[in-house]
Amino acid sequence: MQIGTLQILGLYQQAARQFLAGERVTYLAHAWQCGRLAEKSGAPHKLQLASWLHDIGHLWGHAHGHLEDTKAQDHAALGARLLEPLFGRAVSEPVRLHVLAKRYLVTTRGAYARKLSEEARRSLTRQGGDLSEEECVAFERNPFFADAIQLRIWDDLGKKEGWFESTPQDALDQLDELIQSLHAISVM
Image 1 (cartoon, rainbow, N blue to C red):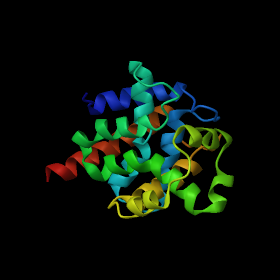
Image 2 (cartoon, rainbow, N blue to C red):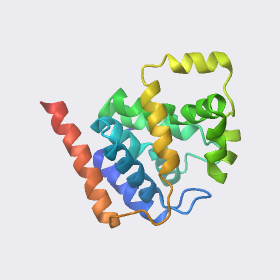
Image 3 (cartoon, rainbow, N blue to C red):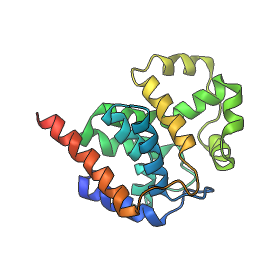
Image 4 (cartoon, rainbow, N blue to C red):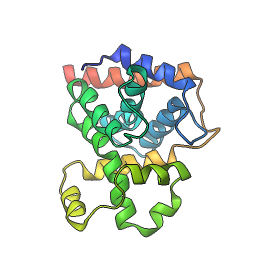
């Protein structure tokens, strides 16, 4: 299973018409919001790209019929498998870990769960719910722990209806520019 830049952009072009389950924003608007939050926070470009692409597993699965909505945790692993060959672990690992980060935050921060959207609370059960103490410790030792936590926070914040300063094409152009800038850095 391989994906290229044009396929990524094609998936996100389709995402302009697909709404997140239980939310009032499209996948493209959500991706753009997460990417903008990362950019405004001064995140490195690779974490910005991970923020943009963290739900690519959902989009790939929907486009190829490989993912059911009931397999909510699988989208993170699928997304990481798609992205690692193109962009490396600094992009793929926060994507792979963003569901685990949600479970960690629910377990370790009591107020966090109350701030989740209704759909995010429902999906938490499908994703495995709270972590054990051992799972929390193991997650904290992961070298991509901090990036995954930050991505998760942007993921939760990036579901605001009406916050989309760009046209879908402008958003796709921004995503393409970010991808191309990372390719240019890796060639140097």
